[in-house]
Image (cartoon, rainbow, N blue to C red; front, side, top):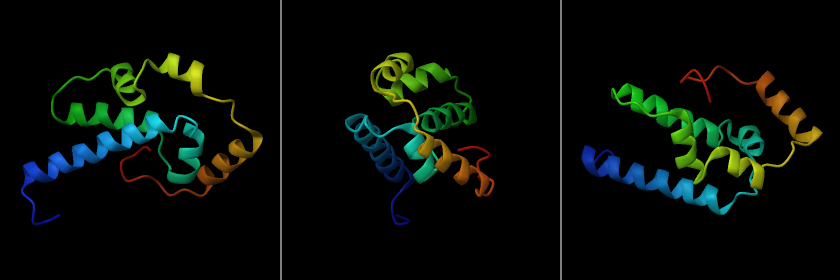
Length: 109
């Protein structure tokens, strides 16, 4: 992608991000804890990264507004309809991952 100009690269990255959000929206059965276990990030992380990106550019973006964008609805609504109680196996896998995880370069996942 080095041959692309900055505007084109940014547009492609934005399109890929929007596609990721659509993919996550189409797969609500994928729980945040599963994402954290497998990929060390979740929908809430994406929301936090949006807020941080806004702050880096001198913009204000409320965390709840960012979560609504990522989840496609208010977080409480998504949680009530789609979030399942974590199983003991999921909690153990997350704990094991956290115990063996190196520090994130961004300071948080």
